[in-house]
Length: 424
Image 1 (cartoon, rainbow, N blue to C red):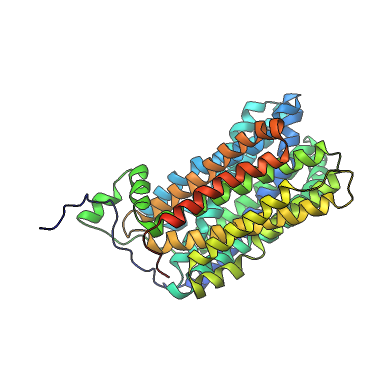
Image 2 (image 1 turned 90 degrees about the horizontal axis):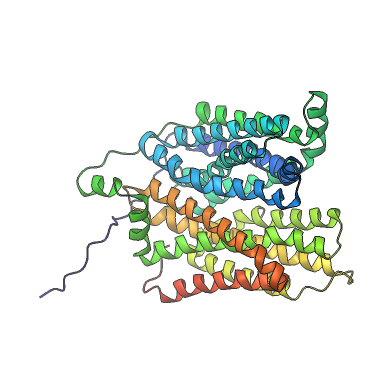
């Protein structure tokens, strides 16, 4: 007699197929990443300073960045729900439009001197990050299975250009803002408004329309399940569980250490120039090597890439924990190497984990599951980053790296306890 097993809320996976206009669609997604990357980096670069100026206290400086991260998490599920019903084009375009409204709200807050309006604006501003994350899944749907990870990684890589250009627009944006009669720190958000609006139009006009295929029966029931039930069902499958945990913990580890590094460097008396250089190297590590990790995922499978990311995180945490004090001339360069490794670890876990999620997601509810994973990714990062502040105050920078290592242990436990390896 066969044992009775509990039914699981999962369905057989279906490989995405190339659709007409796929090359144009990927090009549109790359352009969108360039634009949203510029807008996000331009605004976030001065958001903390603007919040501090509006509130009149340094403790408010982290409000803007935290609100943006939380906003990305809150926007991910509704945008995925919209994409599941009406296609990726509408879902991504609405997200870019929400980010445009958020940047406009921040401009209004700067003029009115009202911090609550800025917080609301930054919550909407975070939708741009959600768009950037969901664009990688949109790219996967346009690729043949053998090139899925590489196609996703190219779209991720495109963020590099925007992330580098955006902060360098702070001074020109400030000057433009002053010319228009706005507070100087509001000026960079003008660029955010322009590029977010351009991204909205590019998506609405250029991205090929592709509605999800109709489903019936059990698939319809699964498609109507709550996001939480979809996530629980995904965690019951070893390959999906590894992919989900790799994406969520990788992002949380990266953000928690990254946001505390400038604070640590400031405590050590290092200049803002050195802080900017270290963070720039970190951002370069996050995005520049993503095509390499995409190729490795397609060639050897995503699991080895996730494990490579875990190894890079180990090196990053060791480098950060044992970095010398500020009196050493090598201190900033030691941190630069550690932060570069941190970015590379994030990239490997994101590309490898996302490839697993894209390949193994059920036919019904798959888009919504991807949005739920992105939401958990952003909200988990916000929670760990909030915890990293008190940890830094109590135990110093080595303790922040130890906090990241705890999350890494969780990822390794999931990988080691999986009973089957993910399919390539």
